[in-house]
Amino acid sequence: MPGSITSDVIKPPAPPRGGGGFGGGGSDGWGASRRASMTGLFVLLAATTMAFAAFTSAYVVRRGVSNDWIGFPLPRILWVTSAILVLSSVLLELARRSLKRGRRTEFNRYWTAGTALGVLFLLGQGYAWRELASAGIFVATNPSSSFFYLLTAAHGLHILGGLTALVYVDVEALRLKLGPGKRTAVDVSAVFWHFVDGLWIYLMALFLIWG
Image (tube, rainbow, N blue to C red; front, side, top):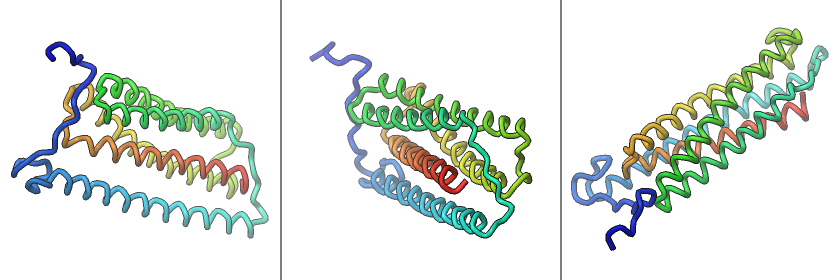
């Protein structure tokens, strides 16, 4: 009935029909484009997993055969940034569920907050590096510090890539241009962010156990 739908609630979009579907693949072009995007994402995640597995192997081996390995206490800010990253991931998931229910304003609020926390995490990592430098711990100080900087820098690059995607989705959503063809970007961005979140938790465990 007229007036029963507010601006905060939108109906889920219907799949495109005919030759004008997203991805240019005919009636199922939209679905084909989504499958291609998700396949590309999982290839990226697999490659990243193998890269960090190689880093971990080198880390553990170097730790085991080294007589000059000197551990150091992790900056306390890392516990704060870890909590920030987990909360960011939770907010993005809430945003994704809100979008599925057609609540666009709620989606915008959660997604923007999650993205902001991602930026805060990255700033916190920079602060942790600064704190280590102030304590005289640099890349070349010790094998343990070298691996710490290497692993956190590699993770930071993935965070930066993830933030680029999150900001893109956020801008499109705030401009009311998050149409059906861009809903896949929401899922891809969120899944990748959950992955880098889990990767960071893994790195923290590695530093605590083997650092």
